[in-house]
Length: 76
Image (cartoon, rainbow, N blue to C red; front, side, top):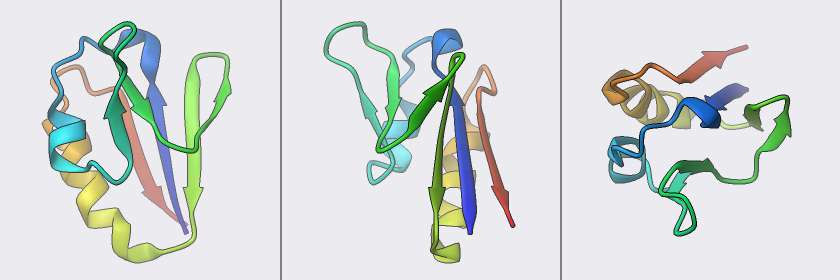
């Protein structure tokens, strides 16, 4: 299982995550910030659990490209 977390409030809208991993990230048309698809928001931390391990590498690429380092990905 892969856990993806996004601190959306700190997003600067650079669009790297949505470009590199459109399966999990989309840019909001309302405020220009990233949305983590199918996530649950708890106090500004948007989290989703993905049962497939093969998504880890793609999400990690998007997380490493984020200039403000607000995307965390872990495998359990």
